[in-house]
Length: 137
Length: 137
Length: 137
Length: 137
Image (cartoon, rainbow over the protein chains, first blue to last red):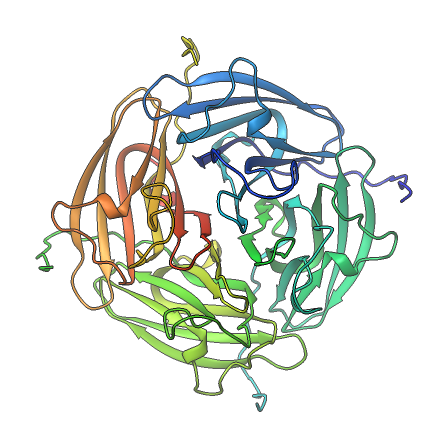
């Protein structure tokens, strides 16, 4: 597929602080890897013409939050961030409840998805993350 | 079923810019086609008395956005737009992460749905898309 | 379980107009009825001390909207409205895309759920409906 | 995994009143307990530096609301509250439609999740709860 030159510019779209209150990386998987590996992702869109610099904080039920995990998303790009892949400052333990706060220096949109393949057939969830509308600018 | 004449008029309902941050068309399917074909859809409602003219832009992780895909929705009509069916200016590759921005000249409401039948049993997700409330009018 | 007298009063909670853009009643089911019958529901909460009078309009892709379907919800009550059960002015055809607009004379909260048991294992979706925040009062 | 001292302080994030309009605890389960027990949960994040004191009210279709169920969440902590585990003032009956209102003395974020393992393969749903934005402060 070709890419298309775009003269179009998108006005700011989204917010700078998002929350995914539900987090849980299943401990086991069924099916071909990596497509069918149980995972949890934050799908992020940056429509702006600047690189977005994200800081993710992971909150737990029984210890202090861990972060920031730093991730960049290019201008006019999407990134599906797998929480399984976050390692610095520390990997997220599997089989543990957590929540995440995602901060960005430019407005972004965040959607939360989980593929759960603990049993033979996969289950999927997806929901819009919570946007802190107070922090738009 | 009969249709019903309605004298009722609906006030503007929805917004003019929406985002679906999560996009992924599975590469394989199980079950009878086309009902059980893996697909991803934007379900759009136009309650107004004017035709809605939509422009959809697809954002990728590694190339420039592609669009606009142009779609019209009649007055007082719903349309379930399958991303698999978008071909002009270019089909969306399967097995690839993407996001979409949907712009309309009249307020609409957008909900995102995916049927994933990669494994023998289907999985469904659905979530309200993100509305850019700044752009209501 | 006993019921509890409550002296507590809830302030107005919710909105008066909601949209579920995605609607589809599967044509077939697997599993014990009625719990496992494929169905689509609008789950509605009325925390107020007045009865809520709802009017539901069903929008289609190829014909005029049908309605109103009239439903009441008592004060401080929830109701899970199955779209399958709506018959007056006309039942909703199965296997057909539709959207719904739900209007109420008191603020309510609406969540959308679908159980899809077309294949042997059931799939569930649920998402908050779209609230028309312009119409709060 | 080590915990990390954080000098970072999070500004208020979320709202003080939330609604989950859809509630249903399945009556049966398949798979290993407790991970695969059918359950319904409210995932709550408290990013503040104060303990959050929650009061949950359960609404039914045919009787008065029951509550408050009192739960605390520590500063900078998440808690995944299983509705199955609520017992005081009364357990929630299984196989019954309900809705919940969650009130907190500090802003929180709430996401709703259900694991349904009535059939052999599990189904998952998750959606952001409804935030009463009128009550932010």
